[in-house]
Amino acid sequence: LSVSDHFFLYFSGLESDEDSCEVNFEDAQVYDSKHSSNASCKGKTYVLKTLPAPMISRCDYSVWGILKKCIGMELSKITMPIVFNEPLSFLQRMSEYMEHTHLIHKACTLSDSIDRMQVVAAFAVSSVASQWDRTGKPFNPLLGETYELTREDEGYRLISEQVSHHPPISAFHAQSLKQEFEFHGSIYPKLKFWGKSVEAEPKGTMTLELLKRKEAFTWTNPLCCVHNIIMGKLWIEQYGTVEIVNHNTGDRCVLNFKPCGMFGKELHKVEGYIQDKSKKKRRVLYGKWTECMYSVAPKVYEANKKKAEKGDAKKNKPETEDMPGVQETVSVITGSALLWRITPRPAHSEEMYNFTSFTMTLNELEPGMERLLAPTDCRLRPDVRAMENGDLDTASVEKDRLEEKQRATRKECSKDEEEWSTRWFRLGTNPHTGAQDWLYTGGYFDRNYTDCPNLY
Image (tube, rainbow, N blue to C red):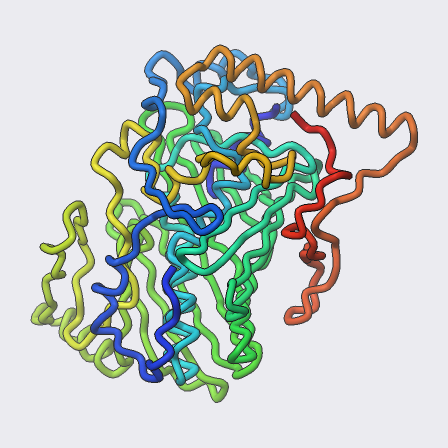
């Protein structure tokens, strides 16, 4: 597979409180920290605290060591060693958007549209938080590959499918088990190679529908850049403007993911504001996508900004003593409300590809699950499974075999003049934006997989 194929993949419950009709962001820290990263199957819940084998060392490999041998070659002809992978398919990595689903459940309970927008904005930021320090790349999905995630403990289920190979497009659809929300979208990364870094624009729209509120929010993800491709430690930066639109109320939230700058002072920072349909600014949001997000009244924010220019601004020290592993660096403006704080990663995360506790559950096969999953589910991929078990040689052989099988299938279809047909999604029109979008056609959870292709 090509470098361009590989690099684009870098970037990338609780029941509702039915009695609550008013937002209480002062409780956000307690509410957020109560959520464990469990996985469920047929009503059971389990916690995966580690992977079967620790991360494979990359000390003997370098990206530059490969690229310098390929000077003058087409970028699309260069293949990267499997050691730079992490033991997940990109479809699984895409499902990490759902790690902080409790924020959607919270939004469903709030009576005020601005309060709902605040929490939706926090969810949009949290959905990219798991990318922090994740410099391993997931496996490229095969055309027709799927991933199912059912979380009865958090009240949702998700299905995703690789709907296109050239260009690579992944589509997903998550729905509440209580018909409270639907969250769906697709990702088609556009790459720019800058020599020392690779920038990925994750083209595609995220759509969140709060069904009982009859509201729909849409946004696009920020740009992602992987630095130090040539030499040094790889690190990831997110930057760009993200605009969240409530298509029913006219409310908008504009978030600025700031580039780190020459001296790194703006690294990971996110700042923005919410305005209503009359364009009146209602709240200011600030924080870091790697840590937390806060909300404050615009007048308070501007007053604090003026004091900061004079050098006498008073800011609170974050209270994180009750959350081991959290090293918050955001200075809190007096009067701010906490919207979201990242869940601490397990102590051994660095030895496990910097996975979060949630991520460690994504490839787990509980007894009995295999007969329920579609045969195209990426949990069944032998290359991913071998790498998770620390068997790099088998993983590499299986990866080559699957890719060759995929090429042979495409060649056969071309010979017979057959066109690939997606199984669970179709290309249609997003009803809220009017743009082309990959939409879920339904039926996956009926468990009829007789016409699924044999990918593995």
